Image: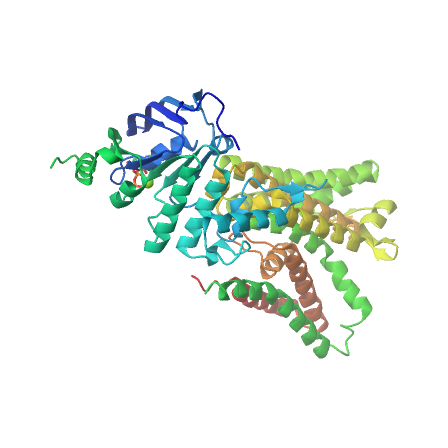
Length: 253
Length: 315
Ligand SMILES: Nc1ncnc2c1ncn2[C@@H]1O[C@H](COP(=O)(O)OP(=O)(O)OP(=O)(O)O)[C@@H](O)[C@H]1O
Ligand SMILES: [Mg+2]
């Protein structure tokens, strides 16, 4: 696997330049700019309604920016819909997970990308199950079996499946929208370990979280949004919680 | 905890088979002296349910995708009438093509409105049911249109191939192809995903609108074939064809284990459900019950079966 073309090692995987998004009269994001590099974890923080999910949905092709530029590996990235962004190596763990509850784990992992075999192009279940088993073991997602139905899984297991899916397909960048919001302590630790693994694989990671402890544990840089405005970007090692809190709230200490 | 839940799903899947066996045993005992078990009667049940079973195949596609089709009964009548009228002026294969095309056209109109105007399929197909039934009445002038093409009657009605009635062959063909496509292709998997969680399907790159259109066309095609089977068996087409199939087929499919809310479906289950409904009609007639009592008892049994197979203890 050589996901990055030669000589582009220093080009950011993703560049956002003066991104703006308005819904009718409401401006959800104004003038947002950020570079994300391979092997880097950038955290996006901000209060409820600050525009975090909106930003993620623009990167993943669900929304189109009202104005501004997005570049993927230095190439202009206009995604007409989410499947195009996925083909370009961008995977998302949505806040609501986007799993089909009555289907099996392996069907969800391969949703929209099912392998087929033979002249009749029939589903290759054997391969899906085998790859699911490998992936699940690798990521330590503890599910009863690849053929378990999603709705029979716990919240943590479902989250694990959603993350495993993104991990399996991501070639460049993973966007995570509050991946541990519903999880207990042990499960949160497991998700954080997975994120470290992905980072070691040289993927770019953009994570939304309301837990500042988590943000400081995981991230290399922290980007703060307040009511659609980009307040600033800090190196995690050069800042502290007090500074970030005051940036989020706008109240200086 | 994660052990007992799949068991529940498995149990629910088996209910239709248990119900089938129970009703069969009940009639076998109650009607032992009235010929229920005779080969001829059992064959009759299979032949009589053939069009309903074909319709059930199409409805599994529609329900699994999270949509509904209420217009298929009317589409059956219109397809049969168009086929019969065309066969009066030209050769029978053109009539067959016209009949199938009519069913698919109804499905296409339903699907296009559901998928692209984004109206609920319940309301759209409720409306087209009326429109299509009206057109069938207008075209046929409320008259029965005779079908006289012998080859057509042989192929779609009373004929046999290697001793197997052609109605059975068509039904088995529809079941096999339907099952293969539904269970073993990406299209089938995408139907289930869309019926289950349309947003997840959408962000996974599944073309949800096109898929919704397609399942209604499948249902229309099945209505077209069912119309041909009726026309072949009765050697005539009439605006009342398919009228009584609406409730029977919906019941058969749901009792068989397909979720009315989408995301779950089975064609073998729909077959057993359809045979069960056919057996029920047949047995109640042999018991000598009046039509009103047949309706009441069938309704109650369907209610009971649906309650057992659909009740979700998680809710
Ligand atoms: N489709 C939409 N149409 C109109 N307004 C929208 C839409 N999506 C988001 N908004 C508005 O944009 C703003 C930002 O919403 P967003 O969901 O991005 O916030 P968030 O930072 O993810 O919040 P949370 O922490 O609660 O998830 C909100 O004011 C919201 O009402
Ligand atoms: Mg959000």
